[in-house]
Length: 144
Image 1 (cartoon, one colour):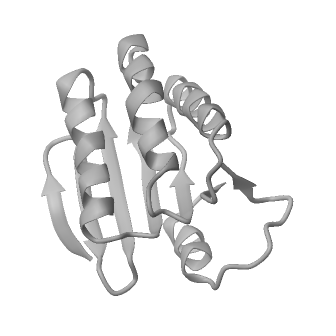
Image 2 (cartoon, helix red, strand yellow):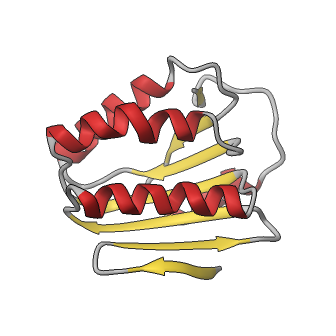
Image 3 (cartoon, rainbow, N blue to C red):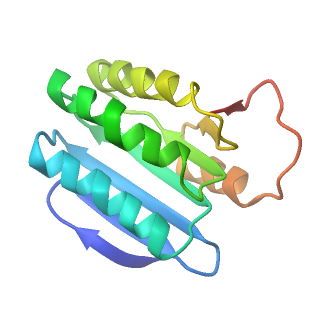
């Protein structure tokens, strides 16, 4: 994986051959910092035509109501309309974050998008699923 961007709160990396992007979140981002990080994710997805994404949210803190509103209006629609085909997520250890991300995921379901989303407990399982050949969705897999 090649580093695309890193600060105290997020590390973004990608693999051009695998068309895979990864975001590792740490702490509580808010306002301009969170929005910039999300926009950098979109920039990376578009620049490298990524079709796979790993969101490691384990250490991501809560998302403010204002940032959630912005995410629902800007971030979620862009994710739903992106090149991504599969998104694996390792959920946050923080309940407030899981609730906010859940709202975003539910909004994503309102778009006509082929993006498959699945949660995992560890990176190894997430990567196995991301890299396996596409097949018919099972009950354990949700599509936006």
